[in-house]
Length: 316
Image (cartoon, rainbow, N blue to C red; front, side):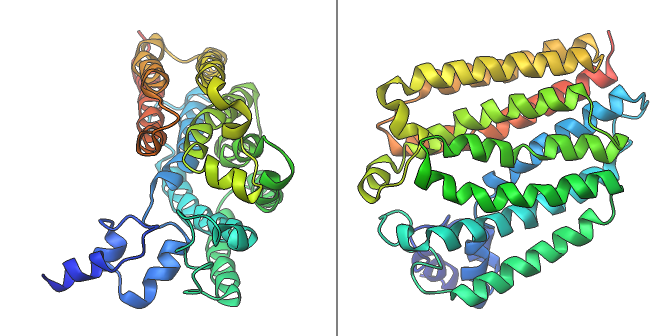
């Protein structure tokens, strides 16, 4: 067995062992990279896509002739999504460290397992937030105000699973905030298409995070944590169908109000089929399938972005 194989074999259970974290990062960095979920990029993508959608659609709405005219903003938001998603995960884990220690899937995480101390986690979260602040200061004043206000949602979200069966709704408010920020970064204001993107993203998150929550529903029920997965139960497919229909409808209307070209409506069809695919394949009693379907939402985000790009380039 090679040294790399041995490193991967001895990695904690609650991590993606084939990720770059275990292949390239030094051993001392592992717990911190795991704490910020650097080994699980899906969360960064789900946070980033609403930003990129909004930047692209705002550029079209405000008459940009170059589809990638705002490439600098896309780069800033990509870095920002990576570090702020990491900071958000740390805040979430600080709130949940005692609960995570009682759940089989999460007990090996850096905080409940003791591989990272509470003090070190707070310092690391502050360092990531500082990087996020430096990026935010590159944007216009209105976007800075919108960005700082999102911290309220980041702090409140971990509490919701203790008081309501709808924490996924708060996650939707939080994870799609970039739809407002991206638009504001381009235009200095927030207009109707951005609000429609934000609303559609909330329902999208309600769907995919309910799928994700079905992995832990037995443990959640045992330790007293609430979720839409527990609330919907065997009616989950119906609820997710409703959420995804609303998502698709709001995204279409967002494109219409932004004056996007006909190619957008053709391009969004594959994205719609992907949502249908998720519903058709969902088995709420199969944890692995739930995880894979949750992760597949990265492809939905990409397909919707490409639809916006097509509508911008090809007016038809």
